[in-house]
Amino acid sequence: MNTKTSFLNDIKWLLVLLVVLISGCALTSEKQNDIQSSAELTIEVEGNSAYLSGVLGADLVKQLSDMVRKNPNVTDLVIVDVPGSVDQQATMEGARLIRRLGLNTHIAPTGYVLSGGVDLFLGGVTRSIGAGAGVGVHAWSDGTKIKAKNLKQTDPVHAAYVNFYLEMGVPEGFYWFSLDAAPADRVYFLSPEEVYDFQLATE
Image (cartoon, rainbow, N blue to C red; front, side, top):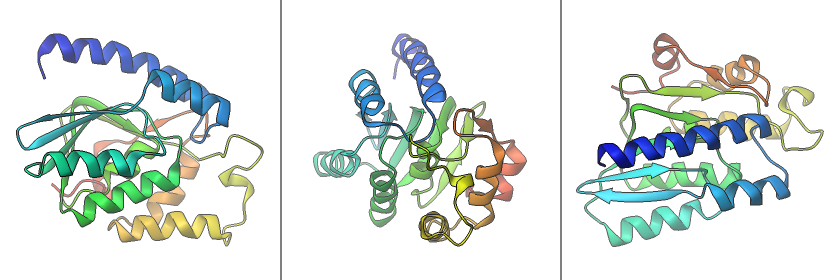
C-alpha cells in the first residue's frame, strides 16, 4: 500500500481503536452495529499478500473464503490494524480456516492487533510480527454482567478458549495471562519477550 493510503488508514484506525477500547472486548448489539458500520473489515490483495484492516465481524469466515476463492495465489495475511472483534466464535472459526488453508500471518510494521485480532493472527501456520507493531490483550466481557473474572475456572466458556489456544499451538497460560493483564475496558500491550514466551510468533 502507498504511503498516503497507509497514513490515512493510521488516522482512521486510531479513531476506531479509541471506540473499541471504550467498548471492551465483547460488545452489546447496539454497539456492535455502530462499530461495524463505521469500521467494517477491509481486505486488499497485492500479489501473494492480503492486507486486513478493521473490526472482525460475524461474516469473517465468508469474507476470508471469498478472498481466497478469488485470489488462490494468496499465501500471507498481513494484519495492518485490527482493533478487535464483535463475534468471538466467528473469529475463532476464521483462525481455524486460515490454518486449514495453510496461510501465514504477519502483523505489519507499526500496525496493531488487539483482543480478537490476536486470535485471528494465531491462525497462521507461521506467524511473524513487524518492527514497532503492537499486540494487545485484555479480559473478555459479553457486554452485560458476564465477565471472564466472574466465572469459575472450570466453566465451559474458559475451556472453549483454552482449547482454541492449544489448537493454535499456544500454551494455556496465555489465556489466563490475558484475563489478568487488563480489564475489558483497557488493553495491555505485550512485550517482545512475552510474545515469544507465549509462542504467539513462530519466527
